[in-house]
Amino acid sequence: MKRGDLGTLLRFLMIGGGFALGYAIVTSLLINQFGWPALSTSIVLYALCIPVAFWMQKRVAFRVERAAKGGFWVYLGTQLGSLSLVALITTRFVSGSFLIDTALFLVTAGLAALISFALNRRFAFNPRG
Image 1 (tube, one colour):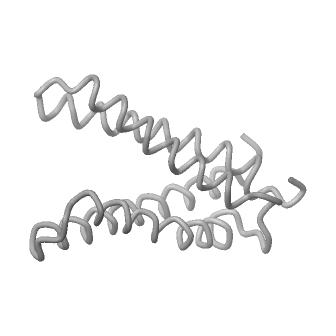
Image 2: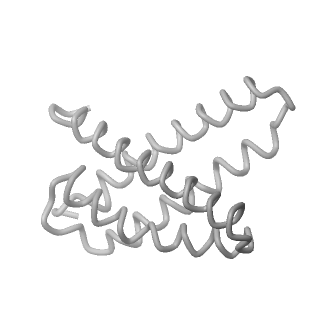
Image 3: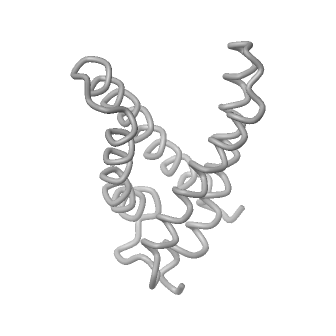
């Protein structure tokens, strides 16, 4: 890891974690308290978060004025890839134990976040592309 990457990684994780927490709270509220349909609510809110999170990652985490050419598509791909990886692993290896399943989710989500950071640093938010 290059000098300065630790700060960038921490900002990246804080932004991603903040969006994940906000997404979870708003989605749960709309579904459980207002009776919105679960699947469509989840998809629409996730889709709305991606462009805003991209802008935040660009400006706050990576501190660049412009993303690399095609950077948004790289970011979108890492988001969808991360979501797919976490869903695949956590649904295939669910044990029924709260602690084990929570640990599995956290480890898988953490790994997905690190992979996403590495790909986005290199391909999405590297102005030299």
